[in-house]
Image (tube, rainbow, N blue to C red):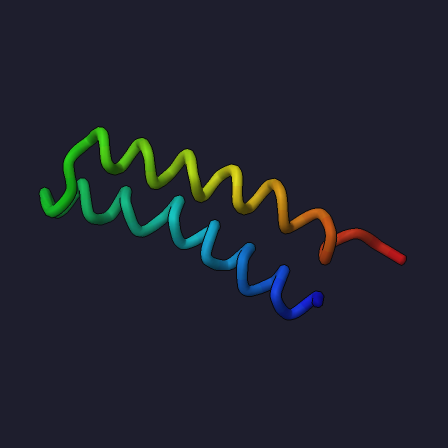
Length: 55
């Protein structure tokens, strides 16, 4: 289960970094960028706390 959470977190993190680079390269529209980053943020904040918490 933790592996799935880590993978989902990394996908969420990628969705906050990759769209910004693509907008800088003029490969992605600003609205699509904002949508992808919002989705990545939600994915990261929903999944990361479950595998990052201390036991």
